[in-house]
Structure formats: C-alpha cells, structure tokens
Image (cartoon, rainbow, N blue to C red; front, side, top):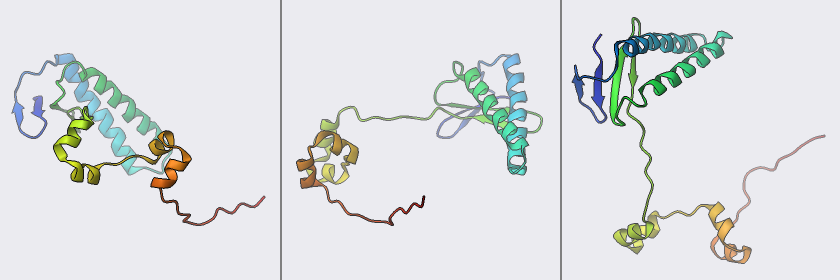
Length: 151
C-alpha cells in the first residue's frame, strides 16, 4: 500500500517520498491493525472484562506509533498506513499558542474591546488582592443546595 502524506489544512501528496524505511512501514501497517482491532473490541464489548486489556493495548501501541514518527514527520504532516483490516492516520501535531505581549494586545485592541475581552481568574484575584480589595471588585452569592451528611 502506498504511504500518503497530507499537509494539515487539506491536500495530499500521494507518492511523496516519506522517510519511512520498509521495516517501519511494515510495523506501522501491523500496528494499524492491532490498534484497530483493539478499538473495535472496545466499541463492540464495552461491558466485557477484555475491554480494559484492549484499551491498554490500543493506548500502548499508539504511544509506540507516536515515538516512531516523532523524528520523521514535520509538525504539520499527516500520514496514513493501510494494514490488512484498518487504515491508521497519524495527524499533525496540535498547536499551543500563548500571548507574548499583553500590553501590545491592549494597545492594538484599545481599552473598550480589551476590557470587554479580558478575563482575570478568581484564583489570581485571591492571590494578588487583599480581602478588603476583593470586597471592592467581587460579588459573592450563596447558591445551590446545602450538603447534608448523616453519621
């Protein structure tokens, strides 16, 4: 079966030379079926005691697959391996984004939009403000039901 490498966001490059040797390709194809069988068994027999074994098998083999491709694929590549019964798709890495300059964001958005979008966690308020300062900016309401315990 050919290896298909796809760029995140669509499009594929069939026949592109991936840096997977024949042994790795064969192992990936085998793992596609191992993981597929395990996940199918999980779905088909969720109440069965074998469920946990299949779940562990799927998780361990997915970890193996991730380790095998970590140094081979670029972060935005996806690749498929076709086993005898299942096709395994290894997706692009997820993205993590962080704001690096909050003052610049404030400047670019302006006060009105910035303060409309801005959030401050209650735990940060607890950490940085005194109890008297918190009284000025927090509204406390008691809601919900009371907990009742019997001993």
